[in-house]
Image (cartoon, rainbow, N blue to C red; front, top):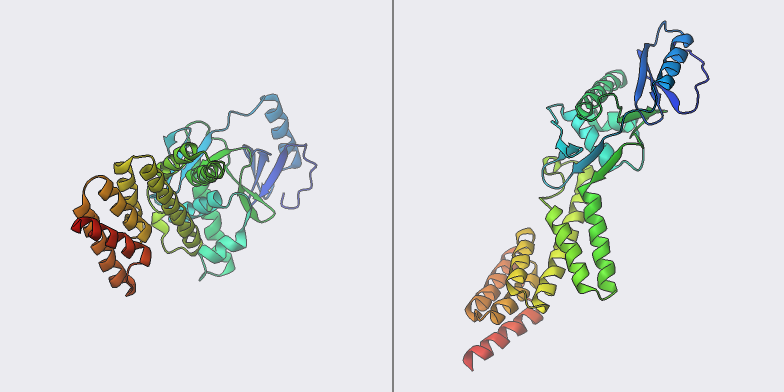
Length: 315
């Protein structure tokens, strides 16, 4: 069977592993499995014929991945138990995050089993992929779907499985907000930013802080989050929503306590709220933090705002 030469009808393909040949539809669903040694081409043809008589395959479930904070995977709205197979879970996250391009077996083996020889690494990879398929098979909608396809040495998620992620939604909302701002639709922009900020449950893939491939993406998303909060704080101040502006500023400072724009916005909010003393204390806090972190003083703009507050105080 390893040397099997068989013309398959459109919509079917064979996935070849060392010991097993798996017949699949193009959408990744399994039709049958055969021993790599001994199964005849007639058995494959028979499986295709029986599959064709069986009608259309079952409805494909929809997956939603949550990368912000602790990783979660939902199937048709229900959380999937991810188990304890760390390698399978690592591959799942990587495939979801890079699903626009296939991932080579060599890349996965070099990343996850760098100290193993080729034979052992390949066995470990096959075992992890088996565990991953079993994990995804726990989706209640359909148990016969194969989400992970292997084609010519490259793994990828089945293109006919619907997948959505909170990161993609976050990026889309950010871009829509920026377009709305450029079109002078401040209220629409703020609505997009508010929705995006709600998605940010924590930094990107908190369990994988030290994985090289997550670091750049984590920084990019954190910067986008801070930028949206900063824009919301300004919008709230300009529209008279002072307490909302204060809240947004403190959310920024939780991520970056040296964010001087937020310190200044807080000073302005407190002045307009009639809390001048808190505004002055905010300046002193900003000065102390900048001195501790960078050995620098507040910017001329911040100092000028403080002097204006002192002048008002003496008047």
